[in-house]
Length: 122
Length: 107
Image (cartoon, rainbow over the protein chains, first blue to last red):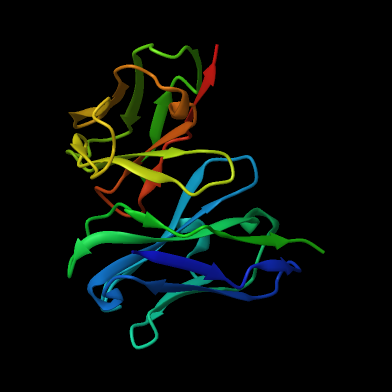
């Protein structure tokens, strides 16, 4: 069965960096695009970024452009989100999610991880 | 960026009720819309994609319709497990975006 397990969250000071990981299993990771979606405490969902199955294309929400980098290691079945210059408004649960497009990008998310909490605070 | 506006933001309903949630896009998005259900402390769950396609395993009481700028999610007969928050998401153009959510509460 498809499993996505995020890790790397925690408390970090404003301006610092953090890298999130998402370990995938139960499917051929290298054939699917992947998304990051976040949710601030008590708030709605915010789409953050997507990376295509081969890493050839990456897209971001404007609020994280230039600060966050999505990447993947298909040999390790792992998705990453490198976050730099963190701000208070980045505080959220970060979910990784699979795009169901096979060697393509469908744009929505069919499987989700349980999320990892990032708290940006001094 | 495309904005999605859901209405209502919250709704008090009863088991057995027919419920309709609306999602309006700030510009045309063809049929590039998905609907998700989220329960407290849990990850979202995909219900509908491509505006009207039912995800495998999702009960048939859920249905989606619309294209262009106006979309609806309908639950034909609300069940106890359906009390949750629902989100629409557009994937017509980057950056993708979600609506603000609609919370279904027990009357």
